[in-house]
Amino acid sequence: MILFPAIDLKEGQCVRLYKGDMNKATVFNNSPAEQAKIFVDEGAEWIHVVDLDGAFAGKPANVEAVKNIIKSAGVKIQLGGGIRNIETIDNWLQQGISRIILGTVAVKNPELVREACKKFPGKIAVGIDARDGFVATEGWAEKSSLSVVELAKKFEGAGVSAIIYTDISKDGAMQGADFEGTRKLAECVKIPVILSGGISSVSDLKKARKLPLQGVISGRAIYEKAFTVREAIEILK
Image 1 (cartoon, helix red, strand yellow):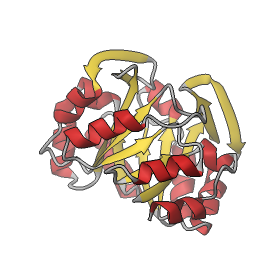
Image 2 (cartoon, helix red, strand yellow):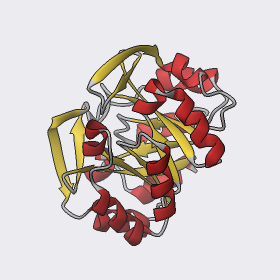
Image 3 (cartoon, one colour):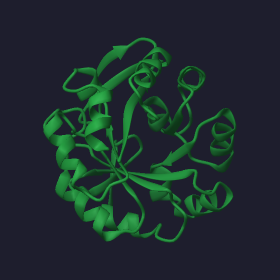
């Protein structure tokens, strides 16, 4: 099982939100590139990066910060936030991103996800962010009428490399993850699932390890030293 330490970008800084609220952002590092290097030095083989401003704007916003992370990290990076067309996907992959996460566009234009999977095999993940069991879009600002499982099933057989599932009510709250919702999703689809949001302790990591997952994303718990990247990697092995 893979650990994906998280870097969320807001105005060029490395932040964590509380329950998806852009007005409740804590800055953890002014240099995202430096933060990426810290994760790599601790053994991270992947880094999860989200352009928060881009998610709200509908187009990439923290371009320089992402480019600096790519240069600094030298490991695989998965990137989401504001990626809504084939040209943007192609551009980021050429810049050195290993996997693109499509969120809002997966709800609003599922055909684009299928097209991207064909054009860039193994390089496309779908980000499903949920509030009360229903998919949220536009940087978590809007709630749709689609359930998490309904959306995931749309992409069975399309070539999606992973589904990244986040329960927004858990994200950044340090109160544990949605283990039951994640288990249900993982058991309902053949696409590998990555758990995101709410991992807050070694105990949570051990619970996650028992689920049929590809990996776990963790942000605030690492920044607040609930465990180190190295410890988390060992636990998830």
